Length: 157
Image (cartoon, rainbow, N blue to C red; front, side, top):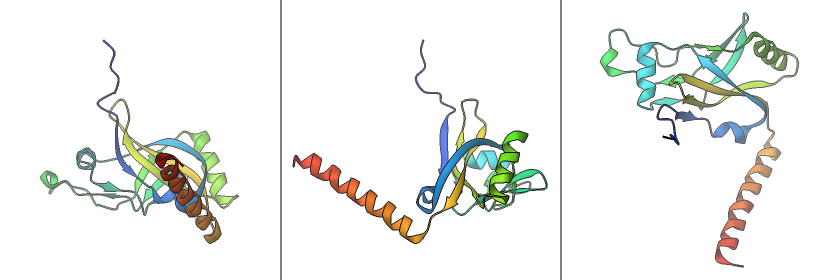
């Protein structure tokens, strides 16, 4: 029996604004250290990573300002909504991220949060360089043109 889609794999949250505001140079998958109530809340899909960022501090990678809604049944032993969360990456990747942010002036931006095949929460992070205003305008113009082109092709012109 062939299983087409794994029931554990599920997108939790996506940062759509990241691709508009930044040139994504490279991306990688990182694990994230969570409390039990945070995982329960993520199973219901209540999170937001749009305003968050990651940084390398004291040899560790941290996710800052990511919102995970409180889980009501765990009121007593719940979690803070916007606490800093440790990200898990290999030492080689951590060194590469540190050099990109310190030497090259890049930013580490979370792109998406999801459950992997084994049901673990993963965070896809990107090494990015900020776009200037004219770059954003060009991206918007290209997106509008592609939308219009699709309409014209659909109408048969």
